[in-house]
Amino acid sequence: MAKAIGLLSGGLDSTLTIKLILEQGIEVLALNFITPFCTCTKKGCSHQAMKVAKDLGIALQIIKLRDEYIELIKSPKYGYGKNMNPCIDCRIFMFSKARTLMLDTGASFIFTGEVLGQRPMSQHRRAMKIIETKSNLTGRILRPLCALQLEPTLPEIEGIIDRKRLLSITGRSRKLQISLAEEKGLVDYLCPAGGCRLTDRNYAKRLKEAFRHKEDSLSDVVLLRYGRHFRLPSGAKVIVGRDESENNILSSAAAQCNILLLETKDYVGPVVLLSKYRDAEDIRMAANLCLTYSDYKGEENAKVEIGDDSDILAESLSNEEMRVLAI
Ligand code: SF4
Image (cartoon, rainbow, N blue to C red; front, side, top):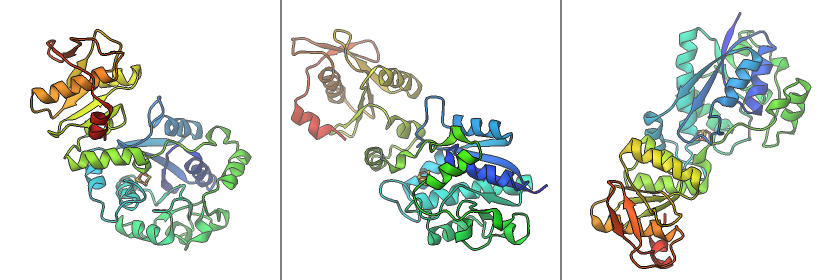
């Protein structure tokens, strides 16, 4: 039996595609990528992919992309899309990983749920061609949902795949995929799986600012998801939790990453993280931000506790001062 690697996000298109390939009698090994920029559900990035793999009775491999991937995001050869999404470089990177798995497992080709014209940066003919060439997979990437719009691939030419059973979908609408999924009983997969924070304008703005300050570790990019962010004149960074769940996340990040944590015990208020601080003035400004977002109403001698159990006197910042510091 021929074998293929199927990229699986767990969303509608990739799930439907795997179903189509299984129906052609191909053994499928699903491959799911977790990046630091996935918009995870509470159950975790790969939860939906695991569910699909289990329901369809196929094996699943999960690859976590970390430092190497962050490096790629910093200087993509083919540039960014609308925000910080370097989709062409990202696809080349993922397909190269998939190629390694293809060679290791003796699979004949790789397939994806991509649709011609669905995404502006990576799903048009020229981009698809570049991605195939640069990942050393010319002719070995099958896109079953839009295959009839594209040149026949090697698995079609070699007779492993019956081209007549492939589809001709284009564009952003998912109407055809939804009705096909319903026809095939895939009713649980009608929504796309999680997205990518790199396409989010606000996240991208924070990421760009962080890279400018050489903050590019895994924890740096993960912490960009939470809280209000401020850059102090010294270059120190302050993150202010916005609710209880963010406060809990920031508290545990402070413990794991050795970042200074500030909190006011006299008022209901946020957890505040201060990193890259230089002097007492940085600590005082972070403490002031902590009070600014607490229930503090201007009483004298308000105290903020800092990481090592000592505390400092602080006062809230004016709106103008916050505007200057906010990222
Ligand atoms: S949207 Fe994000 S995950 Fe998808 S191809 Fe672009 S950079 Fe990669």
